[in-house]
Image (cartoon, rainbow over all chains, first blue to last red; front, side, top):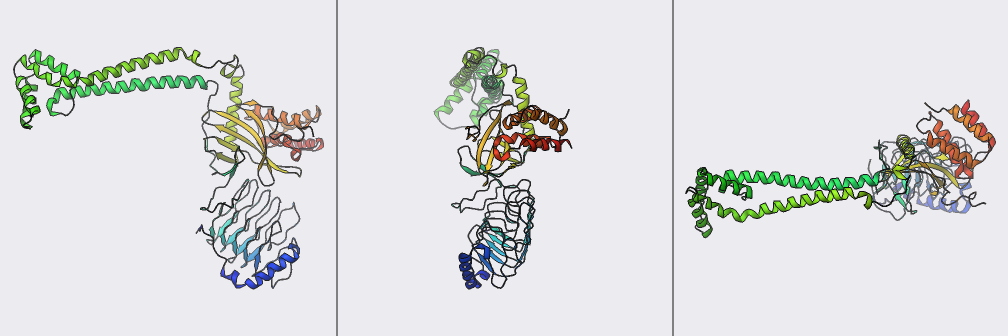
Length: 486
Length: 76
């Protein structure tokens, strides 16, 4: 499927009929949508579409029924889209040939033979409106600058089924799914955005009222078992222990390295670039006193003779290594290596640090109670009901993860699980409501609330329900008329 | 042990018989949902949520008659 991000001019076929177009525009402007007509076709009454094979329709305004739909019974009965063949539709704001309107059980129509649809804001051949929609089929179509689904089920629908696109239609700059989108709630078009196509299928209303596009993630099995009751103590212990283990580990690593370096220096002598350590120097002196260091003296002297530099440093090394051949007195050759004892001193310093770290950890562990903020009795983990609340909290989270119809990963790591939207029973400003469970993996907090949507899908009210497994008796935000005593 | 639709319908009717108050019934359903979430049989959660959501506004409310019919349908 080709996608273009730049705006495309109208098709030549549209320009070909520009005169008819202008006439049509003037006619539409003068008589209104009730009398829509297309040159060459008899006027079609409202609610009943017509099959047409050519013609251009400009600037059809929503929410009129699809201009080519057929057999659209009155709501709320199921509607089925009509069929369009070869029409050029652009700048229409409502469905091209799908079932439109707010209805349940809509099924999209079928479009064939390359209608050009541009700048449509609603489904091309998808079922629109609320309820359970099924997308239609679109083939050989040229769609661009569409902000709604291509051939998919329409907006604001629960459990919508995907439509289909056939014969490689060209779709560019779509902001939602290409061949059908299930349940977009709500969809917001940002007219300022002219960037690359965005295919995310969800919009999150932020806590501050901002609207952000977010990517709908798969509902995975998130790990549970976050214990909130003893988080603070656990964290403090972890920090102390972690710090201590890290310090001791460093020292142990240094110590192992020190022995290795000492052995290497003792065995290879001047034939290694490894600096002598206190251990290797002391061992060398001990072997010299015992008179068993002759092989090492020969080793070092051979290195000196084979690495001639004719420098003062080389002469000094030659002198020391030659003296080393003399029994007992040869111990003096180790004087040349005493300058390297700084490393041994450094190790001792690190050991002191380790001891200090151990002592500090002990002090921190011993004084943890004093350092922690005062905790009220029978609260947190000490609460007699903590176990029950924890159980309910984990049950709620597990259930939400298994049954969510939509999952949202927030930038700060929180995860929201949305239950399927409950549609309103009675007409009003509120379209529906979803039960939301939010889990913060960083803190283990699980919150649940009910959020209500207006007809455009915006969150208009939230109602906290539980916090970490404990039921909340909270007013709505903003309060309902009943809560305000109206 | 699962909590069936029939049990929920029976409990709902009992609650309605104690007095029809949309907010009270919605909160009762929420507590039930929260307490027994892992025991709910297939479809019960959806039915419970139908009652829970009544508190969210007049658009979601059921009359007493509608609620009794709702319970009767669950028992059928």
